[in-house]
Length: 565
Image (cartoon, rainbow, N blue to C red; front, side):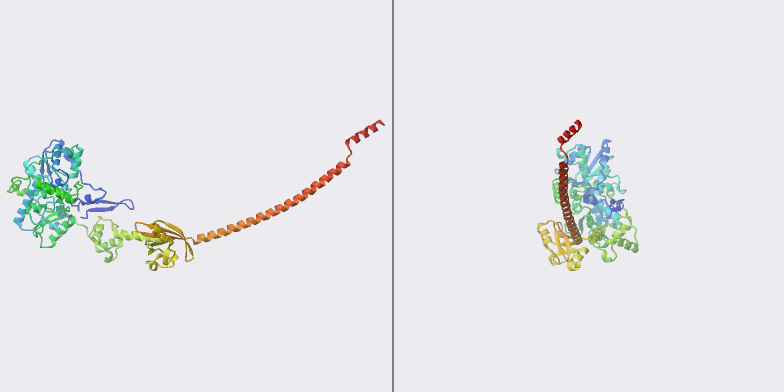
């Protein structure tokens, strides 16, 4: 529907997605498909709590797809009565009225119609293909018909619809049908609410719907349910056709607009497979299991004893089953051809050949995307081929800017890519190297080791006179070998220079030390001879002096004699 608006955020890589109400048909695809569950339908259980708290009489219109949601589905009836609802009836009763209204319109007009039971399909036509409004059967949906019936037989009652459809929340507010149903709940929010109220389904006994009961319309939620309840046609009927899914519904509406050969009645449902595949079906069972559960319930459920008569036509006047539709289309501003080209050129689309029309952005063509950008509905860079090209371009810039050589090979050694630095090292252009075996241009030992061990290998090789520090990385996700070649020739030369300088310095130091030792030894020798001679001289001198000096006793005797004279 192109109802998702994508806008740039304040950050450089920040974008925000929001729903544009003018284009949304409430199909629930965004709810069903979002992996983060960021988009959720509006929760209206507080409104139900309020009307129950006030003491209002509240009746439930329960969609027949409830049978595909839980085991022993009739327990849900008991749980709803415990919650305070005074009446619980099947929406299929309204489907009986609607199917007969479709048949009456077909008989009266004779023109082909698209069934109007699905509010998402009605929204699709009103908002995107208003020219097809004339093909919409002017009949209300089963929920609206049932709501009007309940309010007719129970004046003053509030009606709560419970089903799998998020579009019902908007449908009940449509001015054309407003007032028939007061609140619409999904199965998910209903079960969550019952759990909050302390009402456990596993503790409830099977309940019984309030009459009257439907007959053939309990299969309305399945693909083709309207046709079965209306005409019971065969699968290969040319007059009647059942189509489900939004893409298929769009195609069918376009077919009605472009062809005169169309079926008399098409049961068009927005959800693929019908309502049992609705966006708010909480069951974890697959589609086929849900379909089986619905069929088994339909076979075993109680039917009205008056089903074979005109009983259902008498429940509500035909006029109350009719409705009209409105043109709700909001036209997009149409850019000029020049403006379209300018937008396309911003994302690298300069020629018609560049417009791949891949649809990955959500738009059917690049030009449609450009129109959305012009109207502020899309970001220009929301284009996968462009972003891929840009990412690859950035990667190539980085790889080619690095001074290290990069060679990428397969595990068997076939060269896949080389960068500019590698071209210089191997002395081959990329076009001449790609496809060759790595061993034809260099030593492949480390590549073979990395391929064999599936781990990084590293070593040094000599290549064309260069010393290369080679690191081979195995990339398991891509099953590739990435060789990073670092030219360390200059480093090795400088290391040799430093080594020679160091060796020369050591040699000079050795010679200086030897010379110093020799000088020291000479000095030591001279000092030794001088010391010996000095000792001899001093000893001789001391001896001479000692010999010349008189002894102490002789001197004292002589002195005493002189004194006597």
